[in-house]
Image 1 (tube, rainbow, N blue to C red):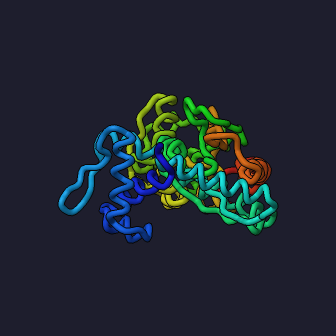
Image 2 (image 1 turned 30 degrees about the horizontal axis):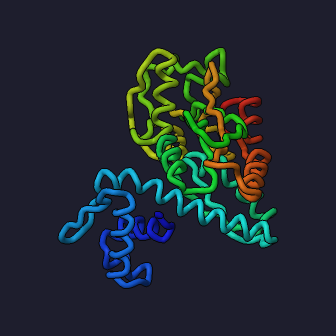
Image 3 (image 1 turned 60 degrees about the vertical axis):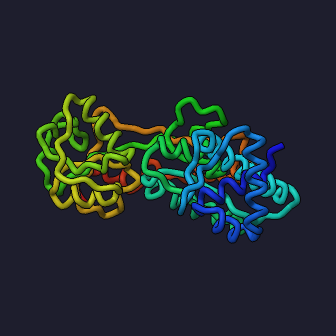
Length: 309
């Protein structure tokens, strides 16, 4: 029967790239590690690793098994943590996976409130560029809970916690802000502009492309960046308009802020592989209460006018 210890050996050998370094990290002898790994391969009925002169390489069977091994180890750790919590221990670590844009705009307020309410539970944060990367990492057992757009075909629990709204940001005094429908803007009115875009592996790049396609054009690129705050700053400097989550625009921002017409929105969810333990469930409650999906300073700015305040 395959044991958690054998799965730990597989994961560690892959992570370290050699049996020798894996044995050192696990504080076991190399013959003992090799013996247990060979027993795992016999149990599986196929080689899991190809031993190269200076490295190891996963076989097809090993590639298929590795994410399940990582998930099993993560589940075992969460089970031990849940038992400690049930015994009344209010300490530990919550593993949280999310997107870079949410880490910038949504999570700071929620994590601050979490720290005030549960100071004994630390948070380990895993950040990803794209929703697909986040879903894959969560499926492999990276975290206790993921925060991001709704995951397609997800088999575990998913809770909707709100909807992000995206805003067009451009330079102060941009003539588009003087159009009759300001502080709203039709993306089609910006079709001839060069845009501050995002790196191709970013989920924000995909969202911007879809929004512009719905308006009937493909955005020309002035510059690309990975982070929403950088995009907003480049737009304010006059490099071109961009589209960013409202919660990433800081107070007293120097550029022009406009609401797309029709709105560009992104649902926000929290999801787990299995029913969340009490600490993960408590975090979702805090997130739903404190996530600044449309900050007050942005609401006021859109109500009073698009320019800087």
